[in-house]
Amino acid sequence: MREERFLKETAVEIRKNIVKMICKSKSGHPGGSLSIVEILTALYFGEMNVDSKTPTMENRDRFVLSKGHAAPALYAVLAEKDYIKKEVLSTLREYGSILQGHPDMRKVPGIEMSTGSLGQGLSVANGMALSGRISGLDYRTYIIMGDGEMQEGQIWEAAMTSAHYKLDSVCAFIDANNLQIDGNVDKIKGVEPLDKKWEAFGWNVIKIDGHNFEEIFVALDKAKATKGQPTVIIAKTTKGKGVSFMENVCGFHGVAPTVEETEQAIKELSVGGKK
Image (cartoon, rainbow, N blue to C red; front, side):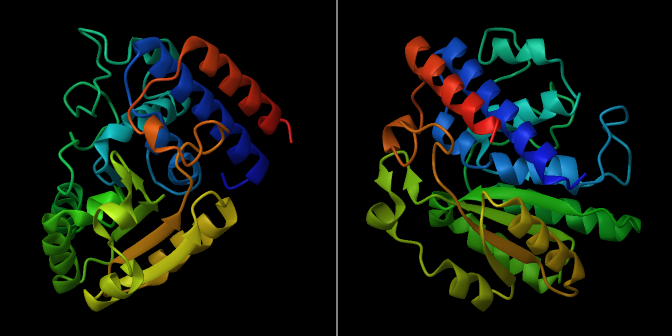
């Protein structure tokens, strides 16, 4: 469903659950979870061929969250999509919970790959795409990476592999919020110009506003129409999007909001969701 009002309302609920579950656990990564909400919402509710009733169907589209520390965003989406019960969200990072700090494919239905060690997701996505080709299946493989993750050498080895094998079923998003755990990406180890680098590695490159549903879907349609090349969508985003005191604040990369901050965040998101 690509109805914008539905998508925006769903994104608000996902953001609320992200903030609440991280507050409850007193641990987690709110900033980078909030920045990818529109991308995940577009994928799961308007693009991917997936079904929570048959989560392992052979020809399902695959999704890999390479920046695994943003797991709260994926968990919140899977709850909205009925893969897991919403009550489980409050157990984030608790001992014995299926919702660990990083995604665990052995415990959570809908999780395709256990991630968290940065730089590895694209290699896995390549393997999924090659497997589909060998098996004669036409599913697509989507992945979200962080811009700070572009500092990892394995990303570029995998990028060469995608292009070499002409894996046009691979569609990668880069969450370009220019913040990582220690500060601004461009000051810690600059990765720009990302568009020219990915083009040089043989990829179809699209640049968008990562919080604009229309732009996300236009990019996804272009990616589908591109043959013989993998596609990377460089999505300009805001870390902590939707919560005023978290937006563009490096400190909220891996710090949980207090109860008072969470109450303020929920109020802000509730007002925004009515617009």
